[in-house]
Length: 325
Image 1 (cartoon, rainbow, N blue to C red):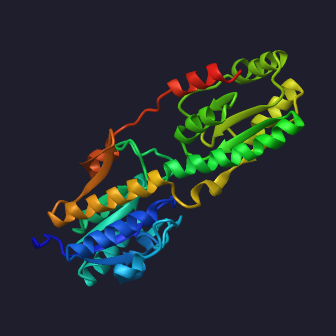
Image 2: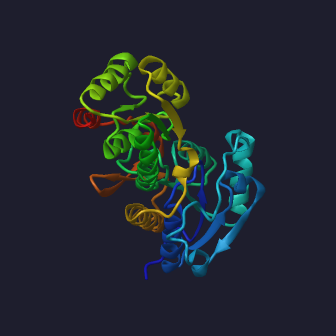
């Protein structure tokens, strides 16, 4: 077996948890051990670096986790790490354990932390893990598919009571300032209208007028999907009821979308990403973000990845609008 260029790595999850993070942790640990690379789990993200909450992981450390949501390494946001002193303390603790590089699983905020850590001579490899799918350099992020499937399941259940009462349900889904979850979920559940941050919606023309028209041709209940960065579900539900006279209720799905067993897609994606991260480190390649491009794995310099922009396919809304009558 070829001697790995890097022999001791750290591993952390940071930012919001996403289903599939555990599958990525498992892949990193077992791939590394197969190459005679030691792995040190860092608990609670960058906070664990600051508090020295670091312990060596073994083959059985990651048994029975591929199907579990959340992250066995826990996660947190760390304002202290954003300071130069915090970064220096974190780097010193890494060196204390002989950690030569760190695998960071998370989103853009986690990547910025990785860039800061690399400036303290602790190089990193980043794996995209966020349900929002809003990382510009990659087509797909760990947790995205599971979150959408969770949203669909919840909305399908909600539809039963919406139909029974002939009311309008305004459902708010997650996504921060991105509409990926909303656009896809809206099409999948047959929502009358979907609101996303990337596109302005004229409530009177696109929602109220459409509700009145479709009611005349026999539609008796309505589902409106709202991305959390586009509008507030409670406010929109009140406006709809005031303008149409149709009983309207808001439902905010919230953090339930972060939980649950990851789907096949997320388990496979996470395993591929974790395996590739260790492959790069074994070859001495660092300070990269691994990404999906047309189902293939590619990698970018962390700074370049953070500078990229990503656009949402608005044709999903057009298809949804045509079909939802």
